[in-house]
Length: 229
Ligand code: TYD
Image (cartoon, rainbow, N blue to C red; front, top):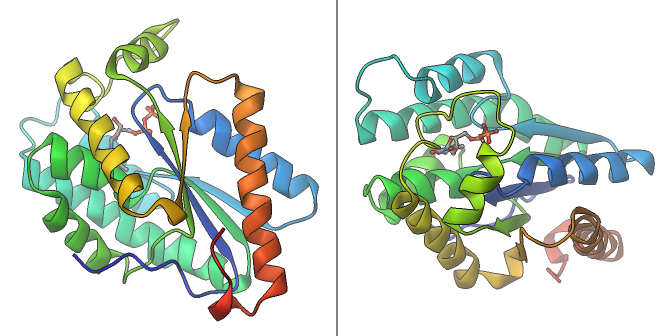
């Protein structure tokens, strides 16, 4: 697999990753609000989705009732949605100098399709590097959640049925967790790993501190030389 290299653009690209029920959406929204309150231009988006075609692909791949979707087909649908998202939303925003915050990105495919479905991390990583023209985040915030905690959190008070991936058994989700942790361990400078059980406010504070460090480094050094904290 090509070595992931953060985007060489004016903007800042942040991805939130983690198992189902980790609280990514909450933390992505809190970070977005905190940065926007300072007057920064922030684009908050999610995968699968983020574009009209991506939202259609989202329901195709997540909803029950479309018949059998085999692993390669599933991986290609996620990658197709991501290709549109990267080209139409993320890359233009980064070129403008915006902060882009996405709820899930390539690591989700590496974990769910590469490991969970057994297609291989490298194969799925390469597919998605191609789909996004090698557009990788500057920082990935991994909210680490065990399979059991994740199940409790996503089913507590749930009003909607679990989607095709969420409804997989705990062993599947345990593999996903390990895959995310492996990705973070391989490139610690590009990841912030936090336990999803920490209080919401404490998590938000730690995420903001890390993002502030990245923004400060960016102001001090030209983009190409910006050190990663
Ligand atoms: P998500 O939108 O985070 O779920 P929700 O908001 O309903 O909690 O993600 C939907 C599901 O899609 C989730 O189970 C993870 C899965 N997924 C993949 O399997 N591969 C991918 O590339 C992505 C982006 C998501």
